[in-house]
Length: 95
Image 1: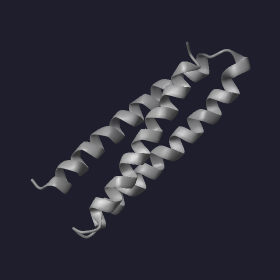
Image 2 (image 1 turned 90 degrees about the vertical axis):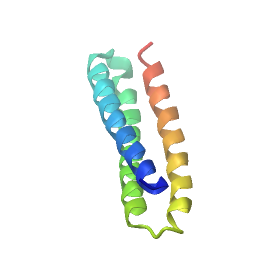
Image 3 (image 1 turned 135 degrees about the vertical axis):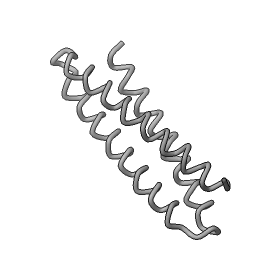
Image 4 (image 1 turned 180 degrees about the vertical axis):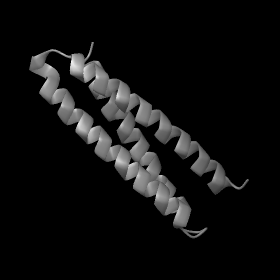
């Protein structure tokens, strides 16, 4: 397996993890107090948009030339960092 295939497999696993995390946060949001529920739903919407952006980037890597996928990977890594920060922000609202 080459590096790109390994990266794609890792990325698909991360997307599955994000899907599960978003589902978990949505359940928590429904149980949240009314005064923070709207804000949490806005943050979850942002998180979903970022996840969808990651899916699009995954498709770009799959279709990219051997030379171009490394550049796309840099954007994906940045998106993953932003996803982590957003998820942490949402999770702290429940504490």
